[in-house]
Image (cartoon, rainbow, N blue to C red; front, side):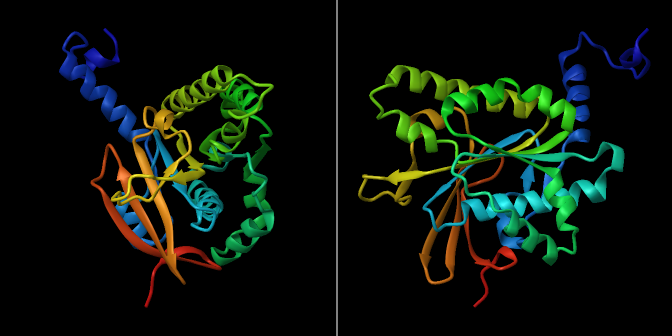
Length: 270
């Protein structure tokens, strides 16, 4: 008699078995807050583990800002909720050379955290091509196990795809194949290791005149098949920014105002 039978669970009953599996998954799941109430609210409380979030918007919309902020908040969460020997780390793939240690230091100060320890917990990898990104993902399981990764970020996912698809020395079919394999691997790893995965994307104009969302992620025709937690960030005027849930498995379509301050993304205040 195994443990499930001792608990009165019939493994041959699909409803009993699924109930147990879901309870185990839910027990291990966690959620990260940005400490911006309205932004967290449209995410149903924050970023959930075992989920992949695609965040797209223009260069001034706060995508990289969000990546820096959620990295610091993840360190704070792991520090408060886990034993020191089991504390998780953050893995940050930077394809655009936009990771700024000084910004992490600044944000750490606002949350009364030791910036040196925060920076030490963020494993940053500079990704110079999609081939390197794909190779890094193939070795990722070993990195996750060795460093106990809890948060995985890529800023941005389509930077190299955007340029490589037009290069004469690289066939489009190879570029497309590599990109699809990258997206598939990200989803597999996220679910397998219960990660929070946040991916940013560069944009292209939406040429549908009456479309509410005026910009779309580059390679949307591929991204749509892999990400169902999709957030659009836009900068309207002055301090006004909008976060818009355009597609999600878990929450309805919503949007909210936010602003970018020295302390990071915050609810917009008049």
